Length: 219
Image (cartoon, rainbow, N blue to C red; front, top):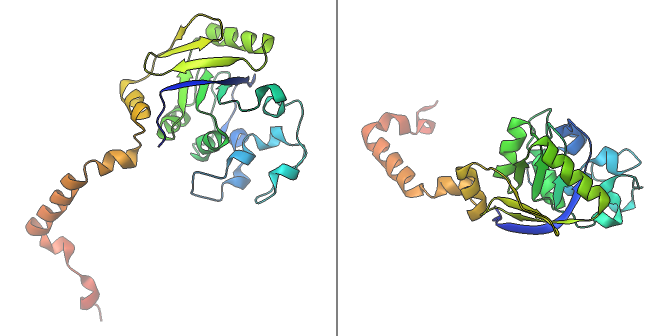
């Protein structure tokens, strides 16, 4: 997993509450267990004017000019401003995969669905929860200055708008450490590989019947 420390990037506002995971990545594109290849279909039904199908060339599809991610001022955006309950609906991990594959590294909202929030950290995305009035202020700023850049500093837990005052945010200490060092669940497990191997060797000695090869005993 890619480490996250600090980020200076364009923030794109998506001014809709209760955006669910089917809006983030529609179900017809969930045909892979790999974490890449979903970015073209992020917010598919809102970004394009046609109905998308699996394997379709996104570069040839008609785009909705009113959708923020299609507007030139938000080109290269890596920070998403959202409203309350972002990521609700089904618990599909493909939703953060699509956001990450598109390039998003930071999500800012008053609240997130619990499972989606946890999945973001596991995929190198920093979801930041701020009070509604603070998020309102960021939306106002983004609307007045389309394409505004925010500085997100995870070590100091601060967001700083261009020519603005820092905004503090909270983040769980363990999740913060994982992002700072790029540690996902697999890496954390592999760190204990020697302990796991020692345990398995010990069980073979103390409970050998669990490891009998039954292939030669079958008729």
